[in-house]
Image (cartoon, rainbow, N blue to C red; front, side, top):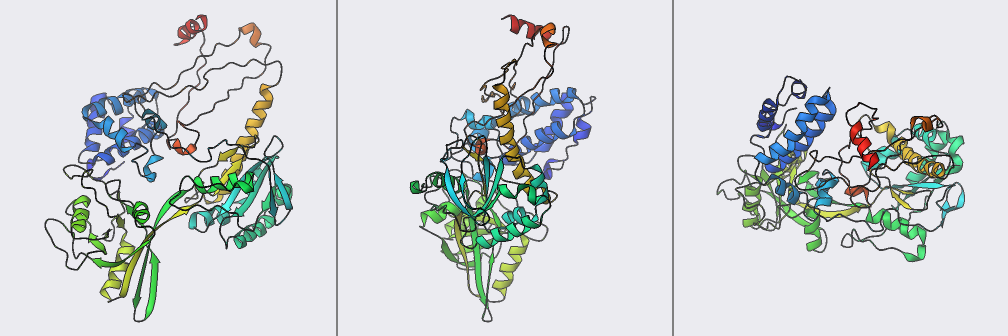
Length: 548
């Protein structure tokens, strides 16, 4: 793994039993050398995941690596733990970072983001008009669960709807699960019709057609961005109103930049994609809210990198100014632009440069400068397009900064008639075909819960509670992977009694600091199950616990 100028970390080499903690420690120090604090923390998480989960072949190096990674390294870096907590505090972290931090940090600061309505809220039965089955009643219970898929224009949604394998979904869909395809967009009904035609042609449709429902009339999920995430509920719609409130409130705010210009009488426009600065500058969304709506400003160029005491070659006051990358910090560039009265900053890229996080570090006054203008890094393609237009003498070249609500596209109503998050389905390269299959496995989860509840009601069983509502250690001294984790010891019946049973089932449920999946970290959490016999390490501890 190569991390910039910090050097190369060879996970396979470090997996060797011959590598001691000293070499390991030196490797980590070399890795973090010259990196900004934010990148150090991100690299720490990446290192812990990839070097323990992906590369290590035996448990011994993992045992020695784990304490070194955090307790030793963070111990060397004065203030690293407090910086980590401050950086990832929910009230200050940008939405793009919140999901990447283990829930132990979120719970440790005692401020867990909440959703309205909360997941697991009850949804009253409601009627819905469908194109293929007429009016149906959506009533979650043991005989039915529902997953709603809402179409909204966009590449990710198109990939899920039209590139994923319907056949895989049909074969995986449990018997009592229903899929409802709907839209919140005024022109989304034709996309629902298009998907319906694809479903009817797909193999296995005849086996599930009575549980597929297509709603072509748009369903209301209105919410002004100034209200988000506390979007209103239309109480007159009953259960449907609660469902659509979740569709709006569980979504996210996305920033947008639209460039428009005229060359030789021809009007051109294009969406600009980029990466906003982290925390130390005003976000586009906050800028839009502060100004009461989208802001359109003239585009101009600084004419250089804005480093040192350089002055802009063009008037930048009240305009969006393009500034070149390199030579000095992002903070310096944006500060210079702000001092000259610029309305916003686009940090441009040259060919081969990739978008990166625009962090801020000492000695820059990152937290005290109160920079109130947005700053966005744009890629080479966008840079070239905009610069070429300016060079060609484009008339009225402007950029509009805006933000909009991206509604939740997948919401479930489970076998208890409760709202459930489904989450974001990956449509990345290599997974395009699996989108609808992943949706079907969500329904399998509901089916498993039903079956588990029924088995727990059966007679002639023994239920051993190993852990019940236990929380992971989230103290400041044990962030990330250094905590002891959760350990539960279960004492099985005697050997004579065990002969009376023919199966052993382990039921495990992992929850987040709050009721919402959005409060979970994105990392995997390993779980080990050990069966202790007399003489094994740990058996004495288990016996003592049983006696107590």
